[in-house]
Image (cartoon, rainbow, N blue to C red; front, side, top):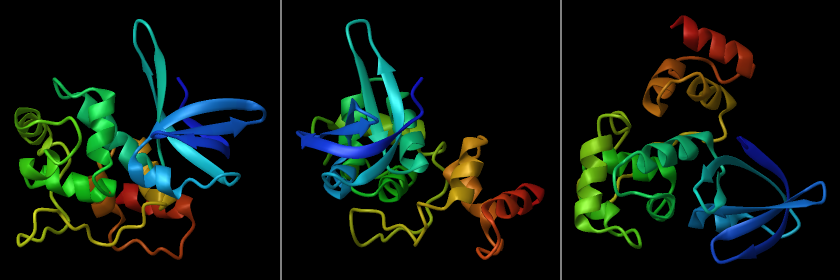
Length: 192
């Protein structure tokens, strides 16, 4: 499996980015936010999900490990394929989407291209307990608003790679100084 792709953005089209890795171009389908942030001739790193079907292979890329994990949860729901999951993640930052799911906001999920009411309801029913409690939610609007989380936090991503959910990893890192090295922060979080 291809876990991540690091290289230079060679081309952009549709919702895909061609990442040149030492002369080999990998086509990576990305969410709208990642597509807009990927600049031509700039270095980029995407955590990838290598989706293999009988007649094709596709790479789906994410700028954060949290977004990749949410994508993998989404495609585990019956009736949600990789393109629908990517459309859901294109609604906003992954944390906002996660909050909407945690709050069972099916109306927000139906805003994704190609996702109907029944599919959105299935997503929130199947995943609301798996994505953890919402960090913050504004009941006056239809979208979840995430508290400030550093999505490039290597300690957070290391804990998630060890099997922690985003919510559990965030809670484990509460009170752990950000001045420490990544390894020390992970060690302290694991000690609890």
